[in-house]
Length: 266
Image (cartoon, rainbow, N blue to C red):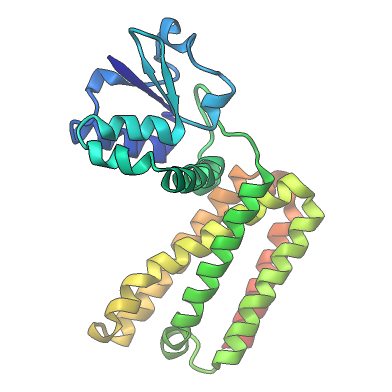
């Protein structure tokens, strides 16, 4: 029997391993978290590597697959063509890079502290910066697409140039504050800001697609709800990153910048 060992403190890991069980790709007893797995199984696993790549253990032989190879092994049990395609050299290389991108940044994505066994991934500067660059490109692109929506429903006195200037000013200010925090804490802070921007863009997406079907009042009400949700998420994520405790100046600058931004755009 094969046992997939997952991090039950990570919502992403819980979600996709749970999907394996629900779809029959994995037996219920073939999915165990690090807190409940038997030592007889765990002794076969590289304890340093398992923090970064989810392990799949064949209990009879002790053979272990890690990361994307483990996922391909699970999927390949019932969908062998996926395993075949995933084993192709170029495809496998790309899948491993994508896996590492998510794995090294999964704690930033979910921003949930471990309460039991802490299986946090290693801090990888290269993959963190790559994650931030992808987020910056996507968020900037999507923000640009939504400028007419913002002007029409939230900031009627602003124009496209002012909106773009405000956006890139905030980006520059956040980068400056990250530099002041130092490399690791600064990249952690930027990761949380990146996720806040991504969440905002994703929450606006439904109205971007269906804006013509809703009244302006309803759109404004929805934007207000999004603002309060993101404000609550900001507080949660800044607490997770210890910014409230050790970087209060960052919070103060954020509040000041937000006030100035609203005055300029209004």
